[in-house]
Amino acid sequence: MSRLVFKLNLVALLGLVAFAACAPDGSPSARFAPRVVSIGGSVTETVYALRAGELLVGVDSSSLYPEEARRLPQVGYMRQLSAEGVLSLRPTMVLLTSDAGPPAAIEQIRSAGVPLVLIPSEHSVEGVKAKIRAVARALALEERGEETIRSFERDLAEAQRIVAEQRTRPRVLALIARGPNAMNVAGAGTAPDEMIRLAGGINAVSDFEGYKPLSPESAIAAAPDVILVPSRGLQSMGGVEALLRVPGLAMTPAGRAKRVVALDDLLLLGFGPRTGAAVRELCEKIHRANSDAAENR
Image 1 (cartoon, rainbow, N blue to C red):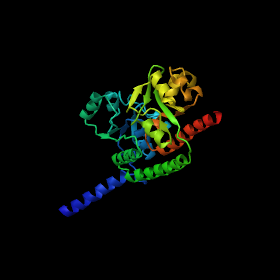
Image 2: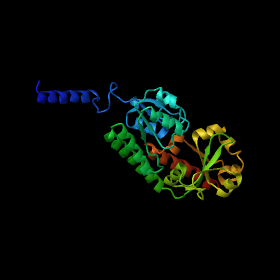
Image 3: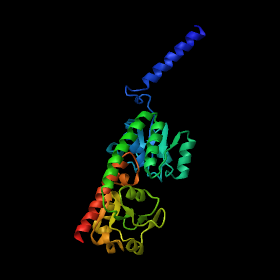
């Protein structure tokens, strides 16, 4: 066989392999698909938004959406990963954010030769787009990534239209609760801070960055019109009545009127593909609560 014929046959063979490795819609087929472990709820949500959920073989415990993600093997909480659990799934790729840890577990996974793809997790509109593009690029689904971004932008534009119609800007105190003895308030630069701004509210506590333990004095000084908590956090507290028994909260305008708003954890904190819809829902909830307060004054 001549060298030219050999090269042509090789090219043809490679073409057949590439064709076989793709489904009719351009996505990887089950036979040639990578085995992906996704760390971080919004990262996992993005994989599903790209219609690539079939590539996942494992997720972390913060991957709560969509429902299919909860049925996958779990490898621990994103900040307390089990390297052994990840490696037991024989992944060919791990998607994770800089929040993932502990460092020793990450290094153990890397040392085993598993490619780690760092996904940006900035709490902003541009951060959502960067996250979608990074996941899409890692999975070789760039076109679907741009489709997902356009869908996100449409949802956000509709949310911004609703925000622009509001005549008030309620003061919102955002609390991250993990049980009655673990209560932090969200300051500037946090995911709740940006979500409140996007939804047309004002963060009632913005004199510090990050999260700090809630004190009775700081709650009273914040004088919020509305108290905002993640849904699972409110459940961990035992509901609204239990939340308002936290010292100081009942003495705030929001506490006296029981104006407590809960939003799904991933919608409030994740900054994933559903952020446009999340902004709309939060806007409607905080302004409805604030409107009810104005009517009762």
